[in-house]
Length: 109
Length: 115
Image (tube, rainbow over all chains, first blue to last red; front, side, top):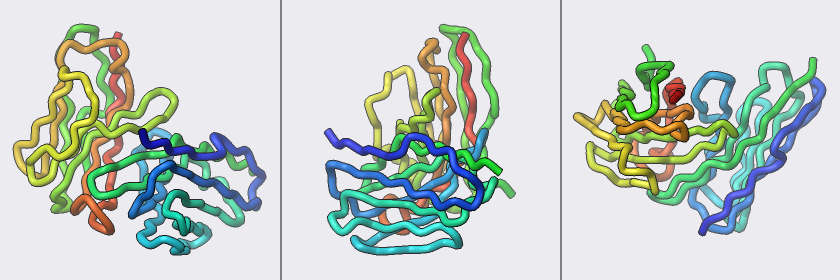
């Protein structure tokens, strides 16, 4: 079956540091999405990637769709306290939807 | 206006009971989903409906039955609740199922606790 690995599982960083997380899969996907979940709320879409090799930014966030279509990374620059939360990659192909296991980010002021 | 809403926000019930969770979206989307998030925060899709028709039905006990009276609503009914059903259930919607139309908008979640 399809295997989706997201790492790291958790991160504890100082405010102002940069963050990097990634997802790798055993299958090829057409779309890679990145979501953030704040405590007690539903996931919110941060960045969407639709083409292999695509690099997209949204403010301090940058994500890339791997050239093999089997992986993606998300970077956060100059982290701030409100970046705290759980980040999920969510690749899909047609009607097949998956969520990564999540990266829990803690930012220490 | 809330884009995707769920009721109730919290649901505490005893084993063996039957309960329903309601979901409504006012985004005009054609596709709606139910996800289960366990205590380790793993998110797993359960069902997906497109224009009131079931398109995804993952391996879920048949005690779980989704119902879509119209494309703006997708309710989840659970029979004979078990302890292992305790989790947060999220409803989501999207315009379609692929590409930019597959971008999903999530509700606030329903925390179900079975005692």
